[in-house]
Length: 285
Image (cartoon, rainbow, N blue to C red):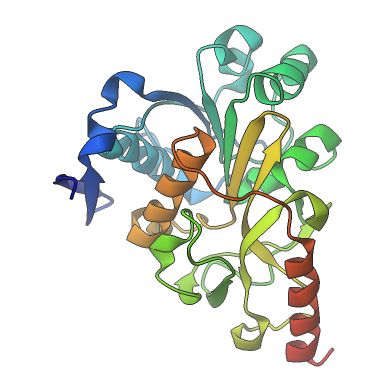
């Protein structure tokens, strides 16, 4: 059995306890370099609102997670014009998005990001919550991230029930089974392409209010050229960023994105089709 080290993470007056494998800690010299983009062009979520402080709650959580696990170092930016450039992207293995709107990124830098950095060089992307409320009219982006925000009937004060389709998937193990409840805002999507993603969890419409007659995916993975993409809708509420289940899921998702964990990313459109039928039956609409 590999030894583990107990680490305490203090954020927003809550204490998160994580067990970190020594195999991760010993790989400090191989840490991934992460650019966490949290700029908002439009609505700004509380989780990425710095409020005069150096870092926002989501940025604190990811900075500490990188330190705890020894997996990655994070540079947080809310200035895409300065930091999301071809020259700067060459310094990173992964980009995290918790963003909104049409970000101020030059066309040439976007072209490099999609056509070379991600698809050819095999880097990775992690999207949180409103990453799908970003570049909604720019096909290369929404095709990459998996879909576009199209409203949120389940607001930040709603407790929802989520079905986990693959509880043994590394990014899902932290939720502890095939179903769980969480209080967070959940998006529905347009530009959703089930033939291009592997859905890992979805709303259970039989236990959610409102109950709507359509599939609402909550997390997925996909290959994008030589790159890898992991997206989770969760993260609107600041409290989610100190939820051990969420942090465990994100940790495993990052491990998959940077190639330390293998898992199936084959698209599973049959899951979306089945969830659509279940939703219609549950809603009675």
